[in-house]
Structure formats: structure tokens, C-alpha cells
Length: 603
Image (cartoon, rainbow, N blue to C red; front, side):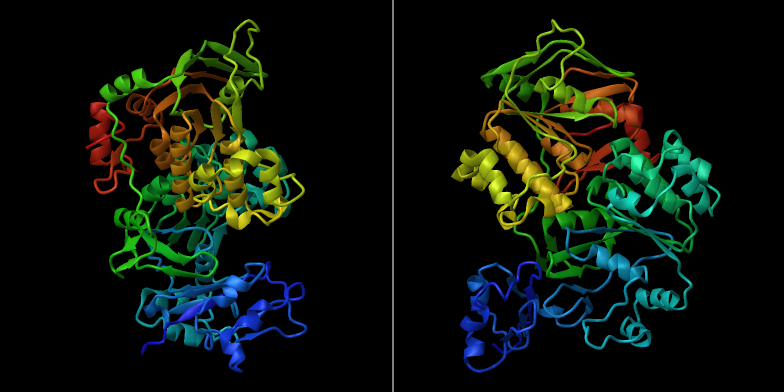
């Protein structure tokens, strides 16, 4: 082979333990046997070092390592150059950078661990790019010369001259109370440089929490506080890392409008977002990131919003003629009302529940009677604080309705809660073994749930050390593995990235159809909700005061009712049928509102 195939070797620092193994990687490496130092393990080093120049890519060390700490990845040929940053030998590297433009919102879309946060740090000037040379990193003159002729040259020149002030809204808002202490109102007043505090407090509905301390806030309140705190400051570059987690649909759209209001002729706004419908609504153009998580990431050229998100879902970049995912994802929801009535007759079991009332302190929930069948998924649509989890707990029998004589049908229930706190002392394997031993070893369950959710890579890790997304996947696996009549799944998309969300949605849908059970799902990600829903339960009323849960209805009528409350309209994308939010007060938006069609199933 004439061309040199570039490959990278990744050694996982957490897993590689040269003191505990017999250094099989070094002993079995054919290059080492020939007398070259391809794999070195010094007596005092904590991890093995693999020379990428000498490696021939045989993959023997990958198979022999007892801790599965080594990955050897062959790179696409054109990636020998264009390295923007590499953290060190045998670690992650990022190729190219997204190009922000003044006066427009740049959206970044890609899986976790593929370099989105690294790219944000570089663009914010918090991390100096080393262009792949980590031993003697280049100075700023060389870096600017490297980007010569692109839009990034002018951008980095401003960064060096300290003419750009960048603010980042962090990804993990639940860790804010550790670093930021004090009452919300005081903290916001200190930062109020733009003088728009009252307007932002009003739109983000922060007035009820102004007197509270940060440690007393819930996830959604912390998220709105963090967005507000960034929006009231003056800066040249605003960066938002996942601004929609913890928020309900209405709050997501309000946050999106506030973020768009920051645009000016010289300001840059960059958003990393996993909810694709919000990203679509927010951005003016999109850069996709692909690669191998934790190994390397590549940033594509900027695309228009629609094209960029469709490329990400299709898994194929036409400009580079490169496929980065085996499967493409489409959202065909072809169910007219006639089909459903025929299908209902074929279903075996039908369950129904009566009118229910539940008072919880000052909050009252009225539930209209309804029925559901097997192999069906019902999605609960409503804002935060409308009692979606309360209905789930009423059906699960965890809490009793106000009238003790109301008989709720007794069904076996498996429940995945909204907040997951890891308390189990031990590995993921022992947790699954203890809770769902029979299902977890069943080959059907393995191919339907465990493999797509990639649980196998997590089996030897301690439960307490798992990240948010890993915990979510283990919790989903546990919930689906518990034998039950009804599966109640609360916010399955939290902490998952856009690709894992779609995989999780497919897993839930397929499992519930195959096992002939019923699923109740609470979900704020619109794309996931439309993909999952057979029928929907719509909530209305005043959040945390008095709300009503209506009877289950078809996706079309339910969505129309729900979107009318939110005053937004949806259209479908012609290529992969994903729902897209119409821009507020656009021609299409006005047309659909006038005809009363807020949601389209097919065009």
C-alpha cells in the first residue's frame, strides 16, 4: 500500500493498569518482537505508550488487553493534516473548527465526547489550540498563520488582541450551586450590564425564585437562572452548552427566543444543543461533528440549518462523500384515524381507568377517565408542574387518589423516575444481575435493548462513577427489563445526546411492541415525542395550582390541542419527515394558525 494510512492509538487512562497485568500488549506486539519500540511501558509510568508512527494496525494488542484499554482507529485519509488540537500522546484529537459569523447563530450538532466542548473552549480563548503538536505547542502568530485565508483568521486575531469577551453557559447546571452561592436576585443584579434584567426575568419566569438561594433551585430553575445570567451580561461571544436540558417545551422556546435576541451586527452566538427541533428553531447555520467518541472528532463545513440536521440524521456528508453512521434515521408516522380504529379491534387486552382527583398541598389534578391497550405508547404532553409524574404515580399505585373508593386498576408497573441518583455500591454488572437477572441474560432482550443502548461497555464500571448519560441508559435498561404490564418512563432523553436519544426512542418503541405491553412516556424533546407516540394525553390548566389531564386522543388532534396552547406550528421535512418548528410569525406560521392546523402528520 503506497499511501500511509494514518491511524491513532487511544489508551484509556482509567482502564490501563500496567502494574496489574502481565503487559500482554507489549509481549504480543509483532513490531516489538522485531526489535522496535512500538509499545513501551516504563517501570514508573501509569499507562502504556503506543507509538502511532511504528504501529502497523494489526489490532492484536486491542484483543489481548485484559482491561480493554486500547483502541486503534484507522482515520479517513484526508485527516493527516488539519489537526486543530490534541491533548497529548494516545489521547483525543480534534480536526478543523466551526466558523462563527457575526450576527448569526451557529449550532453545533454531534454526539457526546466528539469535541463540541473542546471547540467551544478554543473559540472562547480558554484553550490555546496546539495544532496537534503537544510537545512544543506553537505560539499565536503561527496559529493565526495556520488559519490564514479563512474566517477564523480575523476571529483569532481579535481573541489575541483581547477584543473579544466570551461567556459560556456551562453544560452541567446542576453543579452551579457548588461554585455560585447567594440569592438569585442579588446574583443577577450584580451581573446586569445590559440593563435588560426585568425583561429577562419576566420571559424566563424567574420572579418566583428571585429570593431563593441557588442550592434550593430545581434543575429547570437552575437552567433558566444560568441562561438569564449569561443574557444580561455584555459580551462579544455568547456560548450556550445544552440550554434546553431540564426545561419543558414552552420554556425551551422562550429560552430560544431570548438567545436569538442577543444577536447584533458584531456579536457571535454559538449553541450546542441535542434537541434537534430547538436547534432548528434557534440556529441560522449548523456545523456537524463526526468521528469516534473519545478518540477523534471532525467538524464539517457550515451548512444551512435544514441541510445540516438532515445530514446528521442521514449519517452521510455529501461534501466529503463520507458515511459516518451505518443507519439513517427517518420519522415516518403514517397513521390515519381510520387505521387506528381497525387496529384497536385486533388488540387483545384493554384497560381503563376512572375519573381521578388528587390534591397535593395547594396543587389539584383532575384526571379524565380513559383507556389504553397493549403494544401502545401514550405520551404525556404538558408543561413542568402540571402533574405528569403525579398521574404516572397514581397509575403505579404509589399514591392514592382523594376518593378512597375510586378503584384504579391494579397492574404491575415498572417505573423509570425523572431524577436518577446512583446509590448502588458495586458495578453495573452486579446491579443488573441483582435486579433483572433473567431478562438481562435473555438473548432477545440483549439484541433489542442491551446492545443498542451499549450497556456492555459499562458493565465493569462502578455505578456511582457513571456520567449522566450512562446512568440514564442503565436506568432505561433496568426499567424495560423489569417484568410488568405498564412501563412508565419519565424523561428518557435527559442527558442523552442527539444520536443516543433516537436510539433510545427506537429501543422503547420496539420493546413495547414486541412484548405486547403499554408504555406511558413523559418527554419534552419534540422529535422523540412524535416518534414514540401512538396516542397522547394533553394537560392544561395553571402549572402547580390546578391542572386537568384529558383522555388519551390520537396524535394529530392531541398535538393540535397542545401546540395551540404554546402558539407554535409545525411542518414536516420532506426528506426524512422530522417535525420542524415554523419561525414565529413567518408566512407558513400565519397560514397554519389561520387554518387551525398546528401539526401536520403527512404532507
